[in-house]
Image 1 (cartoon, rainbow, N blue to C red):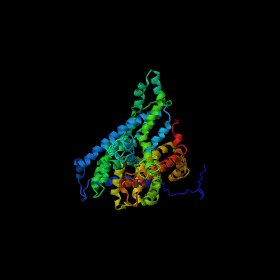
Image 2 (image 1 turned 45 degrees about the vertical axis):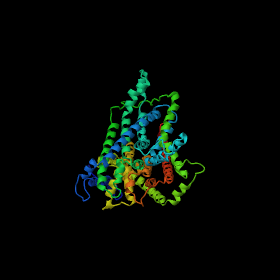
Image 3 (image 1 turned 180 degrees about the vertical axis):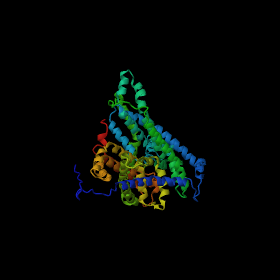
Image 4 (image 1 turned 90 degrees about the horizontal axis):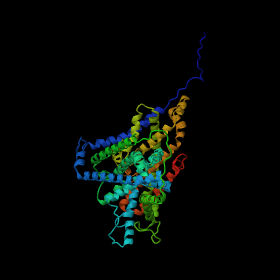
Length: 574
């Protein structure tokens, strides 16, 4: 036997390439840790130290004993509980009518719910100021004109706790609607058909089949509505402060006014953070339960209930409910934008374009705020999408040993209310080594952090659909991880990546809670400019800016819906 030893020629010699994939992925991981842990660490540090830097529990003692903090806490709990109950009472019937009945214009109703979903709550609160302020509200003026009531009489007063509960419910119920409608859409009709075949009435079938299967979604929706109402800042600041009472978010914000009480602000933020974490955990447990799961393969299409002559009455009731978050507020903003006096009904005598001229040509802050908003929207959407793609790739492909920790950190900001994150970022970036306060960088960090959980979850779901065999084949042929991600995986995820980018872009436009804690005169954005104009009472300019914000937001949504495989093509053909 003759053994031959093949010596590789220069052409066959293996080539060694320096692969930057792992260092870059580790850099993304480190950036994520810094993004989340640094502000929360400073938040905890300040809460347990006094102004001299000594360890103390006095901040929490003051929170637990001072009525100035206990009253806002009680108000917040009442507000959140009431809003959650109202949202469930409104969203559940509408969700059922859209998903399981033959009510006309079901797709139109879904679109209107989307309109209320993307309307910034603080803008809705300002619109309801125009509608239901005791003296100047359009609805109250209409009431006095129709009934001949005295000038000091009114039908609505939005500057009350019930008024605030009503407004917050208008812009929170879409969260409940989406969960219930999706649950009913996915519910197979076989069980309901079997109940009907066995003699069960429509009421019996709903009570014993439909309601139990939809109950987890309803409970999760109630928790989300409670969470949203509890952590909102804009609506309470606009409606509660003029009425003379605080919620927890407005109280935390007030602690930053002169003289600032940073230690108390940090301590007041932690209970809000802890309650948010508990609610999100409860929501995950409810949605993850198996008690009401359907066992078996894919069932039949959901059974639609024929409403008969009641279908038009049902549609009228739904449209009447949607008038509160959509038709009336949008009408009030349009009226204020084109009227010389925002609190007067527009007519040929007071029709004007003066408000538009003022916003575009006289208000100096408009250009600065518009430029900052565009820069931050584009930068946050791009950086947030890239970071979410990298972290989703690491966690879904288990690239590093502690990928589960990264997955947790990527979703952790969902448990941090915007006002709390603003406090943490202020404390973290007003001292060395990262002095970013007064620059757009600190707002960029805030917006990326807020948008990251939803972006990460959407892209992680997209990664699960892509078969990793294609990536393995690419790496066997010599491609690096980043090369494979850029040439193979990213093109397959193009739709999800674009949708994520647009989602973050829209979120930055409407974000107020964190921005109001971090802006300066040079870093003001559109949402903060609207908030400032509301304090000065310039409702005409606010209406113009609000309309521009809404038009731009709906234009981006329309662009998303034109993406192949996304939007309208994915909706049920109703």
